[in-house]
Amino acid sequence: MKLDDLGLQGKLIVSCQALEHEPLYSSFIMSKMALAAQQGGAAGIRANTAEDITEIRKEVNLPVIGIVKRNYGNHPVFITPTLREIAELAATGCEIVALDATNRPRPDGMSLSELVQQIRRQYPQLLLMADVSTIEEGREAERLGFDLISATLVGYTEQTQGQKLYDNDFAILKEMLQHISTPIVAEGNILTPEMAARCLELGVYSVVVGGAITRPQQITERFIHEMNQRMQDKG
Image (cartoon, rainbow, N blue to C red; front, side, top):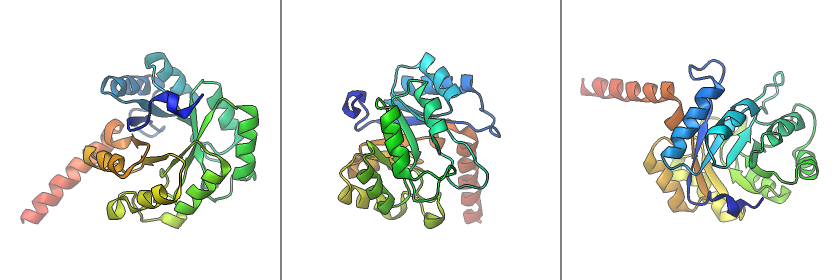
């Protein structure tokens, strides 16, 4: 499988995820979310768990970026953290697997380099996306041979706490694009069509949008926050 064969360049990928505490938590519902995204013109889907991906692939014929979010005690790495999750995702037939590629320790003690080598040996058909939070992590992911590098974790690690991907007109994306030749994906807190378009203008390979499309409770909260803020400002 080659990345260019998937038709993702310059396109929108929709992240269809719901966790156990969320109202839409259901593989059936996520499959319908993915179908709605495809009908709206999405070029790909990002999804969590083998169960969700299996149902999604029954509904859509789009390439899937698969992850498994799994907590191992207090370890901070929870996006596809070990080979166990890689095996689950490979069995679904998803085209791309995304995993935490930060410099934090992994729950099984395996280094990121060792994990990538194992994946390449056992699952050579998989394309790999590195979810990173800093330019340094992105450069290391490139050195390790990831097929895509995504800024997914900007603001979600101890090192980047308080940051947003869109800070200073997507400054971290600009830096990644300047120093990394591996295709860069924009993902994380992209809340409007204008933001997504701006990321493409800067030169990213593709854009992933999740909560702004598929998490209605977050969308509702943003509406209410803006409405309340306007009324307070009004006096």
